[in-house]
Image (tube, rainbow, N blue to C red):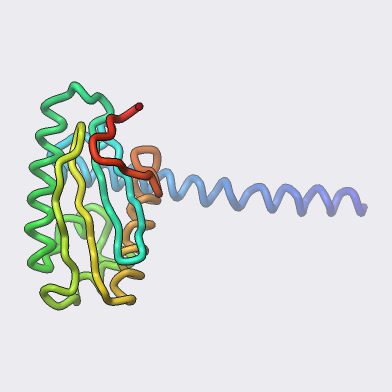
Length: 171
């Protein structure tokens, strides 16, 4: 009887991660579908890197194929547009992809002009946006927002990638 109960406990514990994984997989598929409607580049042809910093963080998007000029151009155009929109507290793009209740979104939308600076920079095979703020609550919101994107983009996103100017993907 004791062995039977132990086996049941083990099986019950194993089923929880599987159901959570199934939900995450479905959400990632839904996000990818909405992302294809919102982002001009192919999500599966790019990788998003989210690097947190003490004053915000960096979001880098690069083409998986460094010779894919079309994807690189589309990534750069999109990030320039995002920089402009976010500078006006317009987070409607991410809201359409990830949902209006995305972690950190409400705080970012409520930020006063100038509380968050967003710098655009082209990098090899793509571009990046660097978010900086002196407000601790906004740093926390940016980090939560990064974490949510990492979870939603699944295999097409990575955390904490160290960037160096001129880095080439795969090197």
